[in-house]
Length: 374
Figure 1 (tube, rainbow, N blue to C red):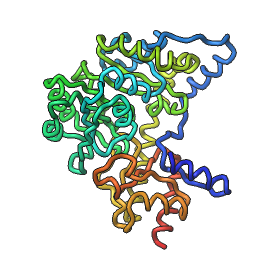
Figure 2: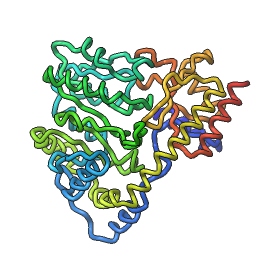
Figure 3: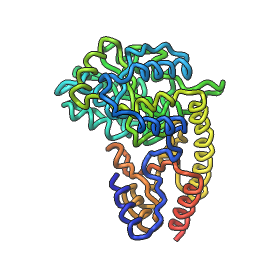
């Protein structure tokens, strides 16, 4: 966000900044949602919904899991939240006590550990590496599980690396944590943008194997609705009343007009529109990886899920922060330094988001190449 702010300052000075730093899809919401949201403006003011969200929307989300993953999720397990951030906040507040240890991979989305720490958790960041796709492995979790470890938080596919855990490994990790009585929070916000397997099947939700896991998801990425702040969590039934009480006190409910309009996100036309974006993102990814190789910037692990590329810039003689500062000032390209995402060996990395248009990606990578050649 700091580099985004600096980019805005440069734009105000008349510079055209190529923004490849923030993970915001350029597609925007499906048209059916936009039309429905406009329609809400012509109706009377909307009252609060139930703290867990509109019943009709919870039913639609449950149907989405049946449609996309052939999973039977109960609407009563679902809490509609103000973005995935609120879903994670509720899960942390419900599960974490002062002094509890929670295991998270390094690198990872920084807010995940901040939410945990704000509830008093001692977050243990476990260094990952290219050999593990920058993801936790069962061996890592077993080695780091201690007497005071209460659970794990895993994002797959992951921000910042764009990589996923092999499903068999994720199952094994969750089985181990469950055997220790630990909670499993799985962030699946990018799941429906992940690559299909070799048989043409979509990426699997952990709920296929572990119905006791807490799943975090959102309308932000697959549906392109970042600024509308709508997400959900799926939790075991015994946890739902606590999540409901917490949401009542933290923010009452998610935006009512946005919830009403979001019902249209699950129409056949809207799903088809959003599904088509995966192919567009795949083409962008292939282009970005090819150009980075031509420029001479290393990508140790190719992404297969989230729309990010995790780049090792050590060959330039700069660390990630220096690279991002210079790229913004000299090439007018905004990126994100690896420092944001962890503490172990992250300083040599830079994250690039390919959620921007192909025109912006072409121009941005050309600018980086010209700057580095000089």
